[in-house]
Image 1 (cartoon, rainbow, N blue to C red):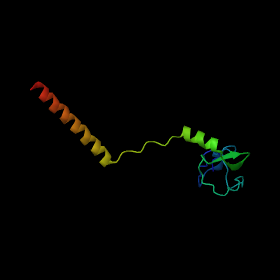
Image 2 (cartoon, helix red, strand yellow):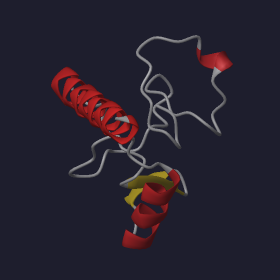
Image 3 (cartoon, helix red, strand yellow):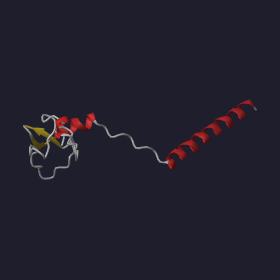
Image 4 (cartoon, one colour):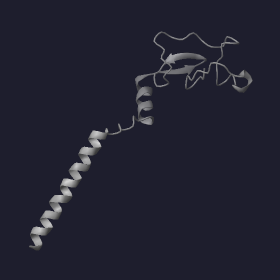
Length: 101
């Protein structure tokens, strides 16, 4: 398990994963997981090779650095927007015809 991201790899060639960055169960270096541990680096950090909860300030910093992307509009929402734009164009064309008239 990666000490910063808490990424878990099931089967690896351990020499490829430095002990300062990774724990492994083979050499029993991995600490006991705290109660409530959920593998989310927003909520947990490594201190002196132990997993500890992050502070509220650290969570806020994480949130600032990892914003949640805007949700992708549904097809229905996109269609409604297109219909609204078409209606606007129709009104503009109608207004131009009236002004020329």
